[in-house]
Image (tube, helix red, strand yellow):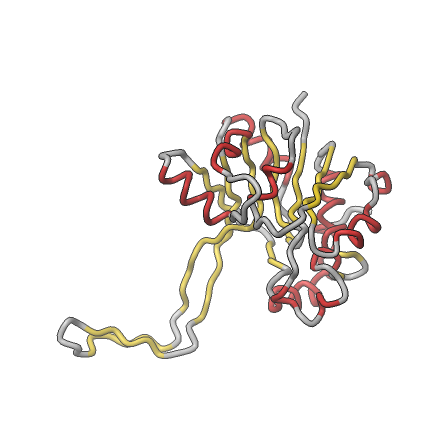
Length: 238
């Protein structure tokens, strides 16, 4: 049976959510009656994960005090403590016992993604790296001018909507990615993607059309607060 291991990135300072995060680390910001990270832990436990390692740095003691060994949620939780910020992918080099395939995710994501299915699809295909992605729309707040090489106006769009696909901050990885991650250096998801593409490695993108908010963004956080109680059955099964 494949061991289901999750690495949760919970070491960020949450600068985008200040002043809220002056007191609490971002993963402990409340959504309804729960910290967002507890919602994630409950979802992973329900999805059959055996073990969670939380990569912590900023206000690590608060996170460790809240979650302890994970027995409250029926899952084993341990911690990898950074003595300096290492970005989103750098912390993986500190974890010595990673299995062949493992989930990596930010600790501030509110989603109804099926983590069990996402894990299994990656393992079955034996990919090196899989990104869970989501389509977003952004309304440009200005009238957009289109011009030609002679600087003549050739088109005009009033407040157009732009569609784009973004990473959800949820990934599946194989141990082979560790070969591309420098030790003890600040190294992010963006750097890993560039390096894997340069090396000619395939990175899979699995689109997800369900619910997803990045709680680290103030607008998403406020939306989550407004919607959570009415939608809690999507995320929490008591």
